[in-house]
Structure formats: structure tokens, C-alpha cells
Image (cartoon, rainbow over the protein chains, first blue to last red):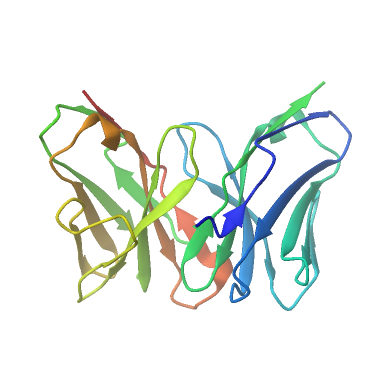
Length: 109
Length: 116
């Protein structure tokens, strides 16, 4: 039972353009959603989060949108940079953190 | 946010043996978590390590295979017992700040385990 899903295993975007990573969840009790970035051989690095009572949170180039009725959230990265190339995980919290399956983002020049 | 020191960073072990992974946090934290990331997979929660009580295991994980200690609010260990090649994964500890803020989930750098 995968409570948090990222249906796109990979995404390729040109430098300077927008990257949109999507995430769906099934448990309506999740009260906080987070995005993490992970490089090989490193632990996940926190990027941005959003409370379930909000629909948007912005931090620099990163914006997370939450649509509770659709149980869907997305991460927008604008403008995308080659250094953004990594695996991105969404995660949802209801006292413990449940991770999605990950999306590998590649930003090319 | 908390700073986590996790060791060893990697190890190659013989099947049938056990490995203990240590997680040290630079501040007192209420909740500590152990995750596993199998090759090409997502992070899966193994258990929640509670100070002063037994760990709480997720479905599919048992104490005999993954015993956990939590002797105080800054330290925890995960042992992978009687290892087989299927246990080859990255194991990560994570902490949640005692202030209860959900964004306070911080991860260690992970232990890359290869079982041969």
C-alpha cells in the first residue's frame, strides 16, 4: 500500500526552464508535506515543506503547491539549474514520515 | 536543525554476520527513525526508536532482524542481524526536533551496506 506516490520516475528539463515534480497521496490524515533532494551516497536534504492548512509555500526558486481535494502536491523549480539534477522525494507526515518513490530530475544546459 | 553523525558510512559484510549502525545527534531529540533505501527504491521506514521503551516497527520489519537501541535522547543504534544479500541497502537514521515542527526531520548521511 503506497500512500505517497510519484508517478514520474524521471524528468529532463533544460536549464533556465521550469521543473515541475508531482506527488499524489491517499491518506487524508497527513498534516504536513515535505520535499527532499537526494544525491547518491548522501542522505536526503530538506528543501521545502507545506502545512495541510495552506495551498502554497515559496522559498526562493522552490514553490510547493498543495491541492487537498485532489490529494496532490507539486514542486516547482524556477529557473532550473544543472546543480538541481538529483532525485527528488516527496514525503508526508502524520507523526512519521512516509516517502514517495522519487523522481530523478536531470537539468541539461 | 540537528546535526547527525552516522557511522559507519559504508561496509561490506559476509552473509550470516551482523552489523551495528550508530546514529549520534548533537542535541536531544524526542523521536528518532531508521529508514532503509534498497537499490533504486524509495526510503522505507523500518522503525521508530523511542527513548526508554521498545522501538515501534513497521509492517514487514521485526525486532529479531533489526534490533534497535535508544539509550538516551541523543543516540541510537540499528543492528542488521544474520545478513543476506537482500539486506544490501542504504540505512539512514532521521530525527525529528522536540519542538514538534514537522519540517524538523533531518537525516544522517547514511550507511551503505553490501552483503556478499
